[in-house]
Length: 127
Image (cartoon, rainbow, N blue to C red; front, side):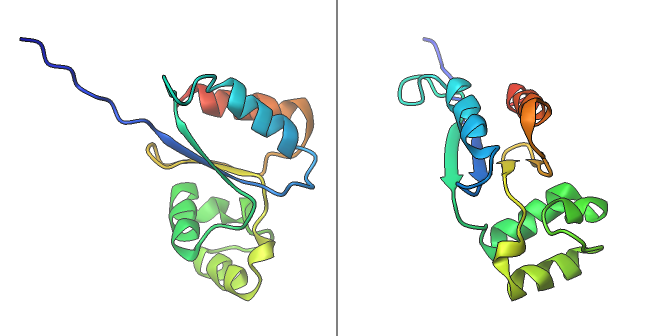
């Protein structure tokens, strides 16, 4: 008798703006990294053109840690300030942001160009 343990599929979310120059290449990279999501998924990809929910933001900020909150809400110095700014204007959330919910990792503040895609590839390789 054999027993198979089913591994759970990690969940990645990307929060993005369609107008951002990094969006199309980043989405293409994520789709290439998960070539057969229906039959043999490497991860489940959730794509979000809207800012995160309050609950998601709180989790993202906890993953980033208090010294890195300005990566997702520019100019803030604390988690409480980030939450207050987000509640005042959710569009202050800087995108794109890639979140690995299972491993508690966030890739934010990507910038543009090849360096941004290299960082994203390294992030995805650790899923």
